[in-house]
Image 1 (tube, helix red, strand yellow):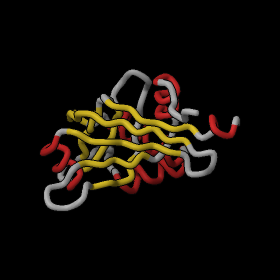
Image 2 (image 1 turned 180 degrees about the vertical axis):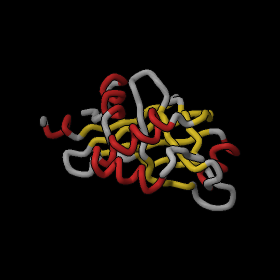
Image 3 (image 1 turned 120 degrees about the horizontal axis):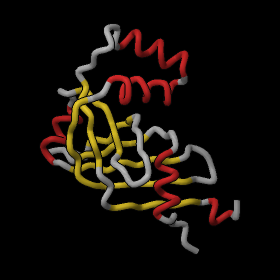
Length: 146
């Protein structure tokens, strides 16, 4: 029995709110793997905001590719992993920073986070756009019949 999800199932899962783990190659040690907030709409690119001068951004610029894994934390487990090239764009504060803060923290805590982190509504973040080329997935509900 295959636990693999169809492309449509994988895209729908990835479009839900999950903390993703972004992995990117590093020069002299293992890959950098960090939790990230992201946004995805089926058929599009994965949008991740990050500090312009962060180690993550430097490695993404150098290697030009990344992997993102999103998963459930409880059984029956589900995960989707995508890998592909990255490009960069300017962050739209309202669409990227604000929307993601509220998406992940809720309206009240999201607004408090934004006020504390970006008091003037300006960010020095850049937007990472990951274009999924390779997909892997598993849905253990298929095994359990759930």
